[in-house]
Length: 173
Length: 419
Image (cartoon, rainbow over all chains, first blue to last red; front, side, top):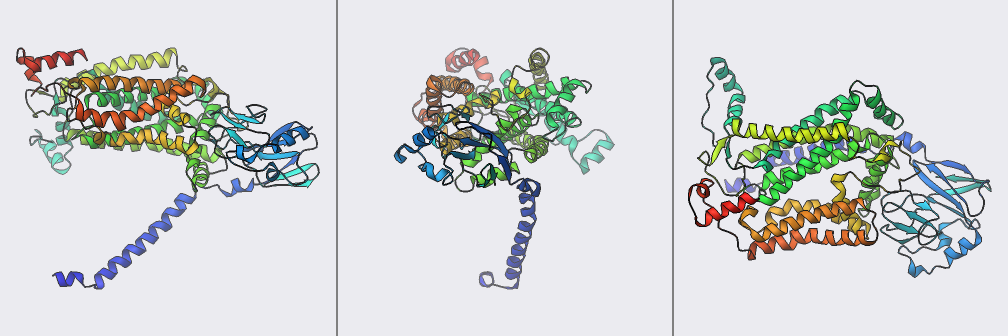
């Protein structure tokens, strides 16, 4: 008996082959059921938004909706830009230069997702300890470059993919 | 289950019972030997069954009128409140019913903590109960999203964003949960589907919970093992059914008080503002029954750390039967545990209060102390207490302290009357 157990026979092969095919089949059935919950084509189709920025005065900002999320477009004054650039990178929880958060030559335009990186609330503008944004939900403070300075949020507010179509239009996405 | 062999009296009954022994099950449930000293804290199992059935019945009715669409959901809830015959009543029973359900489940859980009902041989009952509790929280959370008001929307955003704290795959999981790039119509649709499904999963687990209970039988206020059936037990029917029914009536009076006199007192007025993805309410709070966990989440100044501690505060309950090293079940005979029990109760209430307050200044400091103590209770107090606590003598049977005059067991009896 023990001798027979050790020997790989036709039945062992059939068992292994059946389990393998069964597992692949099960995976093939489960994956569509899981993947159907990911964003559908209609959601993906909303991937770009064009915004007219000609009416925004320096120091002011607007909020537009992109893929269901608010996007802040702020036209910063020279003082605000220089203040954002005077910060030492050592003081930042998520070190990033202000220059890397804007398009070169368009430094006054800060375009970022208005979504707190903690748990997704919309931060309030011109509030908080760093004159930038403040999230009322759990108390995260952002500076004039949208970088996290204080509070539970782990990273700076996200910069979406965007480009200047012309001087008065920004395409987000 | 130590049932005696049951034979139906009628010939038809016998014919049926031989093919599907439902009558045997009925007889088991009727005669089920129950400790004769169960107090009113033991009536909450029945009350919870009532709550679950109420939520399912009112929920099915609400689903006949509700529309799960981001553009229509808010209006359809108002339609239920204003146009549907008795719609206001059914919705208020359903929304307050959720709160009543949690009130009852918290009393049920704290009963178990006081009398040591989670200890051997009842660990599996305890763990199934916790799974029910987890499903209840998920169901209640998704139900709160359905009216699509401001609190619905931002509550959904904050809670689903908890998963984004997971390293590497967090963002993909959140997007997968949303079915969009933010909380949106697909999110509402799937939440409605799952909100309808989960109560039936809970029902299944409730059956397992009761099945697991009927193997060792009920724990009791003095926490001793009983011989069953014996003079220490009474049949479930009519002794326990009538006691449960009386407690249920009292519970329904409180329930009705909320439904008819202050149906919105447990809700938040911001949820009567339609969802707006551009504006977060200044002060967002979850429903009262989730506040202690919310306080734990906010007391940690790190995103991932906060999420881990919040989930940890629930998952630590799963290993509670092994953290509590004391062999004595009931707190009636554990003089020191009794103090720590009440400190723990106060700690959870304190955390709940801090969860409703803004996370700053003294509130944040107290929430941090509360969070630390919450974990200390399980990780340090309970294991150590079992080793050093000098417990009071435990009686041999329920009848003994009543029948014998004087002696230690009688003292113990006096002690347990005080509780």
